[in-house]
Image (cartoon, rainbow, N blue to C red; front, side, top):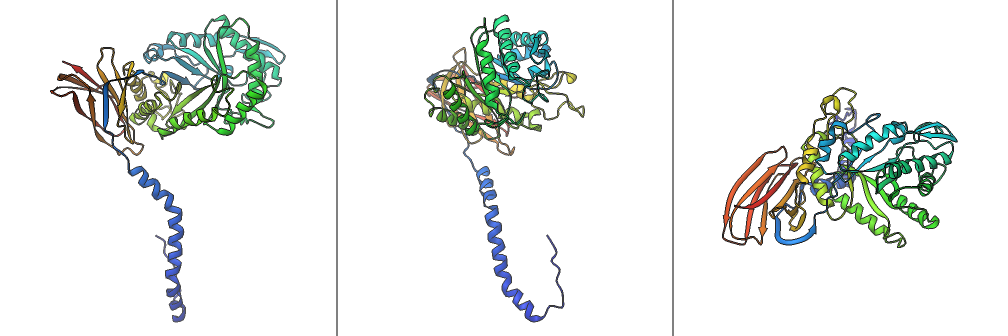
Length: 474
């Protein structure tokens, strides 16, 4: 509170005048402050209110195979010559379908020589590709950044000769999809061009030019297995970028197999909204609607270093976000596999990795355990109703035919806790064993008998927690 100075030399008349004007002055301040705080008040009450979950699972209503968009991982530029290495068994346990990598040209010394006289050496890069293959995944390669020997400046600058960039992409695809014989590889032109290099979709530093020469290189590739090329891997979903790319592709008939972007957000609804928006925009280009795929090639709760990546905050967000993507997003790449090294020497420093840095034992962090728990949900998806504002859920039948429910309670404020009711419908009367497994490995089991065709159980869900529930006949 501020102190307002006053002078005792004010005359009585001035004081009376001040007292008359003061109420109107205070009213004006109140109105102005009220207007400026209206949004804050709305946001406060919007966060404070919400619907608790009331889960209902129809054990006979099979919707089809369980989509698993979370089976895709990404790794950024955490260190030169990074490899999965000793983490191969742990990463393999996540059953990844694709592993996305960038920094291939500035980390793995692929391009050598001088502009107009290039040679290519994939020896170091092959070691990483071998690691990816050992996990059971296929590579999703971000063609980045500009090889130093052909760049006109740093690694995010334009090439001195566009023909060298075109040849670099051609030789990369011929090696990975040709010499190595890997089919169905995705090649993503650049990584976050709107951030790294300040590329745009117009002007002198035009991403569309960067893409065109890459696509020409792809079309020149010989002796290769099927692959796909696209981009731009921008920092978020922007309609102006989307429209610019689609219009250009239609006008030039250049090859373009997928549109990609990144999404870091605490709001779980945004991932679903992204895909809905992108699909709606794509309908405006019927020539491409059936052929262009849509990918979120990085995702997490914060694009900056955040302590939640080291604890259950990030774990709950990962499970809840993945649940919300089921049936909506085909591929979403959790970023990232392993932490970089903290300049201050800490093991946990809010980095995005599922594992700590190798100097600290490459230990699994809560998000890794969360993905393991999530992926244990069965392959036959069941109808589920009653998700709440904070608690998200999905249901399936296990390989033994037992109904399962995966639950995640994510609350960015860390306050919401619920005793979540889960009703299993259309079951046989009898005695059941209810198994509840929580993040960290803690388990609870109990026996419950029912004479009805349904059974309700309650699951205690503290803020930022996840659990897997299974109902087994005794």
